[in-house]
Image (spheres, rainbow, N blue to C red):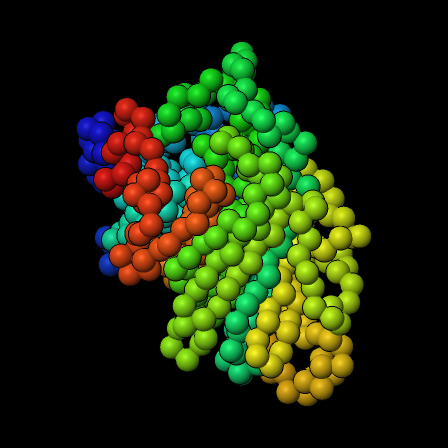
Length: 470
């Protein structure tokens, strides 16, 4: 923590009279606690595109006051819309300045920025006692996720990763089916996302990053880069295009895996894999993700549960095999379209096929529920299925109610962290083309020292080291 921030925090502790929340030391509660009768004062980092959607969804719950807005481009069309919605919110272009100048004015924060930028904001927020809602996946590197999990435990704050289906029907159905013994003895799951991605159609023979372009006058490019090493500005790095590049994003796996694998990962107690095999990498290159990918994740036996594989398929021409009696993959209103196009009903929608020793299930993404296949089997089991409770709150209300002490979040870092680390291992296999052998206890890659070093990632840029020590 820099000296300016440290001095500011000392001063703010003495000057809370003008702030609308009750000081935590008066309540005898942990730092950041919000009385159930009060709305949560919320600061928002990343206010355009997906970040803006998060802000609108949290505001719609009626449980929060949006008191601060922060974005590295406070002037682009996608940020201006949110600024107009909350004209009284304080505005910042650098999250560090927001904490220095207004850190006492909010109890919780949203992190709706690119994958690689989640880490510094989240670590600073937790170190200062702020509750955190961070988009999925939690971070870009395995080590960053590890530090975030430890930070949440150390600072005892409320955390929620933004895989919003984890508060909808699929979550409660999967849990009820596991508890009732309907889902048991699972040996394999196919997870698939075969819609068009942003990099489809790009030239995979690329040998360098795109050429430098003039930086928009409203954009603070230096802060946008955060702890990443220096890159010249190009429009194909911003506004969602960052998802394409290994240096910034996590590809289709990091983007959609958290909406497809999440319930199986949690309720089947998968943890971390012992092996990740890049079975197919079509048009592999060193800069952006393959046009099509198949990854085989292998998980060991866990208690009474047998060893299990997850086979991940992405790419327009990489449709996974489906079992007899699968039926039709119809459009599901619970599955939002990809950010750059509509889901194609002629192909499989994003989703999963779960194979157990006795039953096979098919399901979609996000909150979509599972069904037993084939239809004859579903009819046979219809009377044996347990009642599934309704969700008491959506993902956004769940986070805010947890800040108020009324609920526990359903996707806290302790649950979302290992899931995000599965994606980090998968992306390493995609990027390098190498099979990964992983020691689950030591959390180390055992078959390659280079790959093991990549778990940590590149050193942070000068001036950003402090966030790795908070």
